[in-house]
Length: 176
Image (cartoon, rainbow, N blue to C red):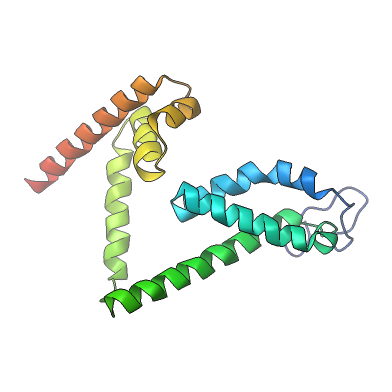
């Protein structure tokens, strides 16, 4: 491992450039992975697609340099994250202009809320948890989630319904 955690191929040093690869090969090798990462980070498939396309466009513009880097994938992901942060900042500023200065969120409450959600999800059976996270959190359709889980879409809908009922019962038990 090099100083930056990059793996060197046998017989190559970390600071030696990687052998050139075509941009098309790089794109086909990395597009699905980048898209999945951005879906989780952005929380929106359309936003993830836009960010992914923009990141690849920027890498393509600099491919002569990026293609010889030790870790062009790292450069691609860093570019995508910079784009996401930039869009997030612009959106936040635009919202502040429209709404005005919103009260500062309580960071401790956010952490507490996250812990409550994670605890509630941990109480669900794994299949119900997977179905509700894919459909509610990641916003996949039942058909898309069914392909990921290897079950019928009706099974995903049933698991989702069962998970919501279990979470509702759990909430009622804690409210009492």
